[in-house]
Image (cartoon, rainbow, N blue to C red; front, side, top):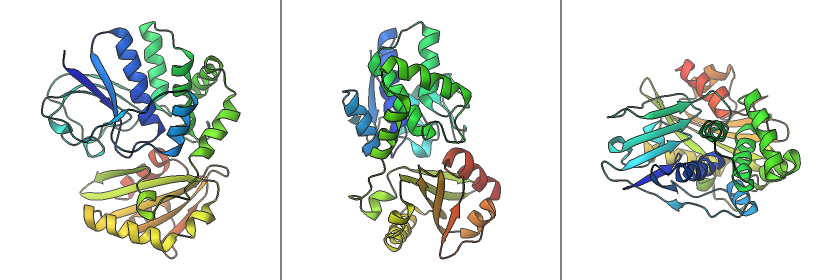
Length: 306
């Protein structure tokens, strides 16, 4: 049987990496497909913390797939966010918690999407439906993904189902939810050794709406002021990225995980961002109180403004 490749989106975050590994474990237990999890980019420090804590190796890097390659996609569905060659792949499964956009397949498939805060929350339900018990390590990976995507259950994307599942998983993983969760998030806030170019690509996603091509990148920090010290260099990196990738609008979110607010730096068609958030940018930047979610608070507003 041909290998079925499992992967999340490019510029992978914790949910996309861990959900790939979790789905790999589920599929191997079910025994229907010969599966292997991959990553489409370098893992971040937060993800590394979770993998190291639970003793799991990171997936291999996948840069391109051949026509007809059987795949399973997690934590994304937009082809622009996926591996090179995805348009001609044989997509078997998609497990996701984002809007469905720019997605088309040649054959029927299994597609499971739920409006929850994390892909791992959906995967927990898949384990239950399949009658498969999860072990301590799998529970720990699921929990880490949920903590990451919901900012320790504080993000507006967090649902009652995420909270219920997170508490259950913490018990199985034998960790204190708040203690472990804070340490995990803190691990991802060390940005000291990133170049500006790396900084804007830690967690960055492309979108296209009505012909407008835009990029939304996000970093988490405990000090917005510290990141903003490099604003000029960050803007240079954003400009270079926009020129190289023909991007019309770039929004860079600097999110304070303690206070749950974000500072944004915006370049390109800035009038779209001003309309989206009902703000007036000053020196290409603005402070958005209570805004922490790209998926629920930023992208939908930009789409409406466009």
